[in-house]
Image (cartoon, rainbow over all chains, first blue to last red; front, side, top):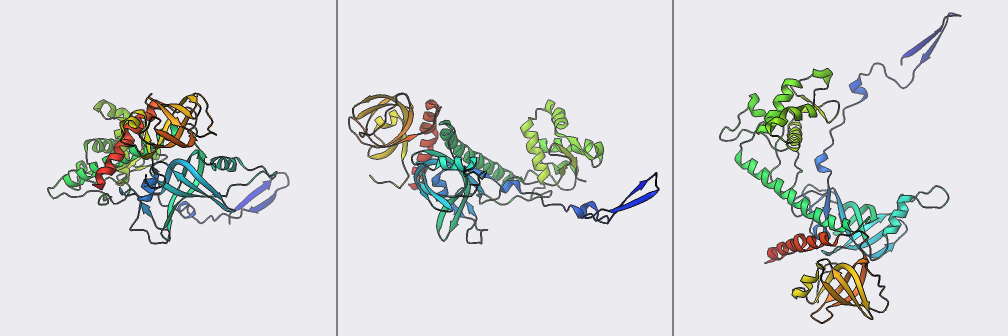
Length: 309
Length: 116
């Protein structure tokens, strides 16, 4: 336990104060153990329709009674967003059951009655009022929650339920469902092409796992039968041209310890590559891919990267 | 008429007149324009006017955009209303029409094809 000494110059008295709760022998890494990096890819919010929820499958990896779920197209489910009309409301002491329909089917939604804390004067909180406003027949609501299956019965456990803010939200939701699916499909197809060609030296680490295809490999080179990009040399690490270009810049200007450990900023990379026809989105994707492959790492924030030697 | 619970077709005026969705439960989103006794006229999302037979207690509000659920049959007044829903203010009928005529129908067709 460290000591803090205070001395009085007039009386030459010294007071020693022990500081509790601090282990001076601990190193910083012991005090703040590195938390595992959150798997952002798995924490998705997918817009769905009732039919998609009804046709969802139990993921093979689910082992508990509740089970992990995935959509029939292979996308794993974490949180879902659903817009539908309230067909019936059943209020109980601890939760409320809603029957929601959106034209593709009818689904049961469970909303817990938590969050009803008030300021002590009996007036329900804003959140509770918002939920109560949604519990009316024949109105459209938007909900966010998790799909759960227990004992063969499926329901949506909603964390948030609210009335649509405007009519366009209904249209937007269905368009978003279609867009989300098409985007997933396109990514699957692109992955399939990359896996088949063996042309590139790495898999796309940011793809959410699912039934769509083999899980991409991390950590460097996949040697293709034809030799592909090879292994070990710098030219093969990045893979496609944009990835290689970004990686080269980071190697040259963002090595470990450069710029007081901050590495190189994303804006600098974009400025240097803008003249070569690479868009900001391409560069951002390249940074994400290289980061997932372990070739670069973010330093002070997500806008600064350094080369992982 | 048999359909799974919660399953209905979102239609516009053209789809109603095509006859493809006769004897089905449909949903029409449109603007209420006129009321004559037990008939209410709706301007569908594609601009086509469609009469709807309503019950006595139906609340008509001119120019209000609502969703009307009803049974579609091949009659002079093709739709028998049974549920009205408020879809909220500021709904763009043209965008909604694009959604149901392109995205929604494309999804329906995919489903139909997959069941063949």
